Image 1 (cartoon, rainbow, N blue to C red):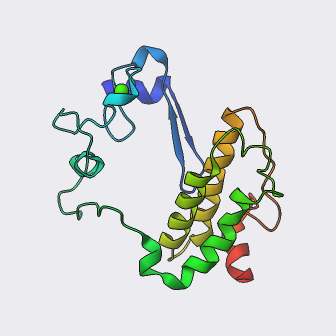
Image 2 (image 1 turned 45 degrees about the horizontal axis):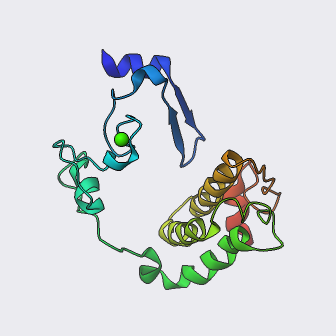
Length: 176
Ligand SMILES: [Ca+2]
């Protein structure tokens, strides 16, 4: 069937943690729909609901793609740091690696705006408070590293102290 052939012909990259990247071959343009868009070369119609209605309302868009109607609706402007204020300070300190003008991303700042990635990093790091808590932080930083990489700036940011590729989560937990 169609979804089976999609799996066979395209790249699905999973980091065994919190990130999945799906790279479709061009022949699948317009074969897909959903949260990742419809891959038709027009970014402006990617917010199309499951009912095939284009919208500018991101809440309407994401809620339309819920797998189970039992899931609660998305909350507009939801900030997980409000619910876990004890984590916010930690999240801001950790995520400051993205904005640090002397840090590993300094050469990327004039290529890719670091601010939205920093904001997402803080929110994600606040949200991930039960198990795998550093994985959300590491994933958020890795997203900026990926954007930098795509802009031609290769950033070597992982260290034994920060998001080391082996068992980084347990390492960070002990340190905190
Ligand atoms: Ca599109």
